[in-house]
Image 1 (tube, rainbow, N blue to C red):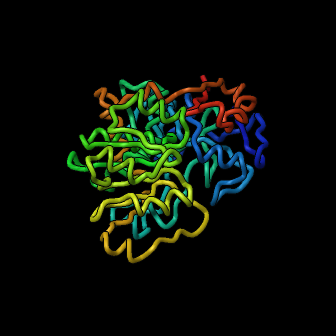
Image 2 (tube, rainbow, N blue to C red):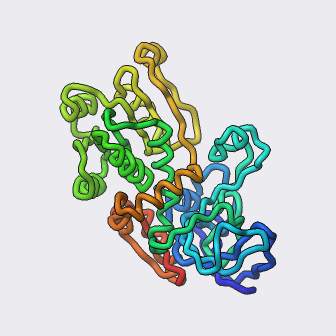
Length: 342
């Protein structure tokens, strides 16, 4: 079967070509038709040559809204014609983390569109156990489940409740997901962002305690003003910025939690006496669990999570290469770009 495919040959160099796909299915696999591809930070970093654990050439694409075209002989969780979101993390079931219920941080993991070729093509095959069905959601919404899952998992990991005061640092797509799920807990939530356009987007789209820009005045003073003299009990840093991640220690209340969602290629340092006297809990949050995908689909179907404001840019599959470079420019104001395959 010949299919149209976009390949990232090397940093900055996409090309569209026709590739051959073997449609023979293993008993546990499904053949999927791709309808939507969300463009995420991983794709942008790979294009810029800044993505860790990455090799070229690569077919990108792991935020996907797909249709089931055919199923293997042992597949019983999906049917032909189903619309699905794709959980793009493959893992070794014998890994210690997997056996303890944490496949999202398995020792041996392959992420679709990162470590193996992804969904930036018309069709591909994938194990059916990683597909999540919705009878109500659009392909746009299904493609957004994976990026929402990163923020959802971080909020679940921090065990945020309505008693918490929460700061989300960074209003990119991952930060926005964390923002939405933190708000869904009933907690008071503030956003920290230096980009004025993204700050305005957050304040217009969500019911926030407030927004702060650390370039305007001292961040701690702004937080205490928002939270009645207190600091946030939970800080979620989604920046992937060394300075922000190190400064975040100073923004958490005594006894609070700091969760790193973003990551950098390097070391982070902190002042141990300050960390110790606060008895802080420091967490990393990686990927998402199947339960997170199910939770997101339920909340979107119930109308409790609104994905409509997210998509700010669109392109048809054949036009994506021409559009992609512009999506990297801050002045473009991209929150989420969506590629329409069909």
